[in-house]
Image 1 (tube, chains in turn red, brown):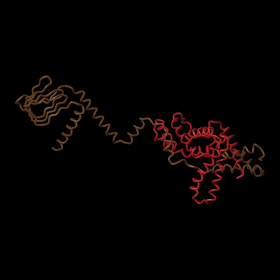
Image 2: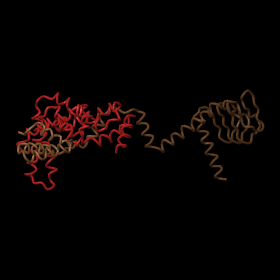
Image 3: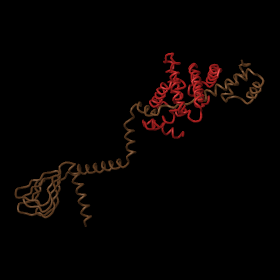
Image 4: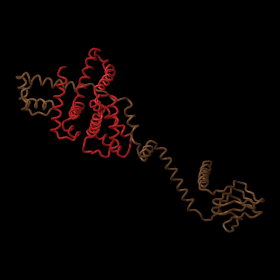
Length: 187
Length: 204
């Protein structure tokens, strides 16, 4: 797998776009997921994820092979999401609701396998509440929490992605977790 | 509220999978005794479970297409290379054509000395081959880099490469008479000759 990615990156560096399509295929779900958790809106997440890949392509020459390629991609996507969060007007909650409605269609499609509609709805509400709680986190906590739980990344990887000392990453995860707990305790 | 900062710190270390064995032991035994800490730990674990189990959405089906469409155009060299590797037969064919054309071209360029096929009765004057009046030449004549003036008869083909033919009113050629003055004519002439030779050996 690693070999495959390395060889694809080499081809991309030579300007081969088909090789880049393979890379997008491999990481699109994770990157999209990351953007969605950061931004809380499917449309915006799709947009940000696409921009992240385009930036990766344009800047492929700055990629340092000593770093995990996925970490490099996560870094681009995280920074981009944070930029967008900052530019966003405080209509986060309106957006979150829209994303929830989106989720309804998605979820009702998935729910076919054995879960009753009541369960699905309840779980959907729960999903929405969790996502809202994530969106309420300040950006520095949000980034570490999302990275930690999206792909079960290690503290070391998160520290590489965000270019922060491990100690700082830990502190932020702990604080972020406590903040989430406060938001979700009543459930 | 939990008892101390230290205990809470351990809880988080535990959830990060980053706790020492000894501390984990102490944490466990403390939680068994202390209800407040137990509740806090339970709430944290529940939070983690919620966040971990949040359902995963996937991007739109044409996500890759949209990304690819928005990339800056790739370098020409790469597209060209890919085309070559995807069409090996055409590549080989065009390479062959290129090489054979260029070698013929080289021959054409090099070969600018006056020469002609030796046949009886031919007279030569200043790069002009003359078939004299009243004489009959049996066989083909090829003249390179010179002209031919036909006043008599030729029983065969006449080819002039890089020159002109002058056929007098009394002159006669039973075969084909041809002028080859351009490199493409020359190539075509060679191709025809090869074909003709192959056909001849086959019929034998």
